[in-house]
Length: 177
Image 1 (cartoon, rainbow, N blue to C red):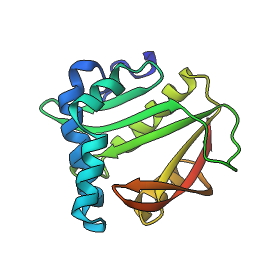
Image 2: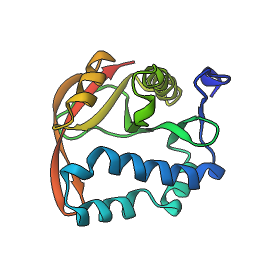
Image 3: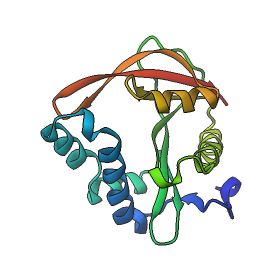
């Protein structure tokens, strides 16, 4: 990914040897963001299914997905996953690429890292031939919704996201590339 080589924020394409660090960071980030709003058993089920070492290794080896990380030296500071995927029914976007995950560690909030990571996400989406980037964001996450709106995403509908046995509503947002 030539567009992010030498990125000042340490953003790079993740490789298989990052799986352990990514699994730890991804699980911690999800729990930090959503544990206060979910039952412990639902959080445990979701984290176990989505963020274990084996799952991360499979995702990092998947040629149809790009995982970007911001490496802070001793630990990760942020990550995002991008892949070609059809948006939920009723959402129209030409050549859609999904922003599947986008997490920035709390100490890095307000540093500009999120904006740099979003630029790298857009570059990765263009490499897939995308013309639009879409995502689902929990309807009760106003900070994330506001960030995406500042990045040019518009709310175009809704979909569902299961956290364990709890079905939640996500807003679907789309931005042109």
